[in-house]
Image (cartoon, rainbow, N blue to C red):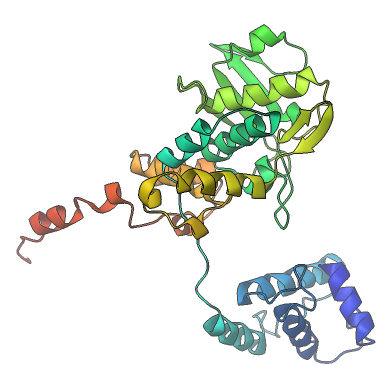
Length: 334
C-alpha cells in the first residue's frame, strides 16, 4: 500500500511524508477518492468504504513506522472528523455486502461423487475437504487471486498414529504415513494464526470426507513426485508437470455439484464459491452443538466477526424456535 501511496504523491508532486504540509487530511481524502473509484485499487474496480478506510490506515501506519506522526489524528489523538464523515457517507452509498452461503454436506458429498478420475480431480477434492474441516481461507489451501496467499506447505504437516507423534512427513515410510489417525497443520504467516501454533483433526472414519485422509493423500502425492518440503499442499502433478488447485476450480466444482441436487439444498448457486468452505465448516460445527467460543478458536476469529459467517435461516437452527418461544412466553413480571 505504501508503494501506491508513493506513486500517488509522485503524481501530485508531493512529499510522501507530507513533511511540509500543514493540513494532510485533503491529501488523504484525495488518495481515498482515487482508491474508492478504482484508480489506485489493486483490482482497478470501485471499492467499498471499509476497503478505503483500511488502505488509508495502512498508509498511516507506515508514517508511524518511519517516526512521523499519524496524519489521520487530530491534536487529541482522535481520527479527523473529515475522514469520519467521508467514510460514513460512503458506507451509506455501499450496497449490502455480498455474503457467500454455507454449503450443506450433501453438496460436498455430491462433489466427491462426481469422481476422482484425474490428478486434478483428486487434488481439488482433497483441498475442498481441507478447506471445510480446517476452516481455511482460500489462499491457505488453494491458489487464490486477490486473497492472502499463505498456503500450508508440505513441511507444515505433522501426524500421529495413536499416541505416537511423527513431526517430519518427509522421512517416514509411506505405509506408516497412510496409517495416520491425527493430522495437524502448523501456522507460519497465515492470517490471525499464531506462528508455530497447530490446528489439528482426528480421523472421523470416512474414506474420503476426512481431514486426516485428505491431508495425507496430498502428502503422499507430493512425496511420490519428490516435491520440495516448501511445496504448497494445493500443488499436484500430472504427467510429471506441476499445477496448482485454484479457488476458481473449487468454485466450479461446488456449483456443478449443487446443480445436480434438486433445489440445491436451498443455496443460491451465485452464492457458492471457494470462500464458502470456511463458513460451511463453521456452520456445521454450530448446528452440531459446538460452543461458539470453540468455533472462534478453530476459525481464528478474534472477535464476533465470526457471526457474519453464520446464517440464521438454516433449518436446524430455527425449526423449533417458535415452539420454544411459545412455551417461554408465559411468565409474570416481578
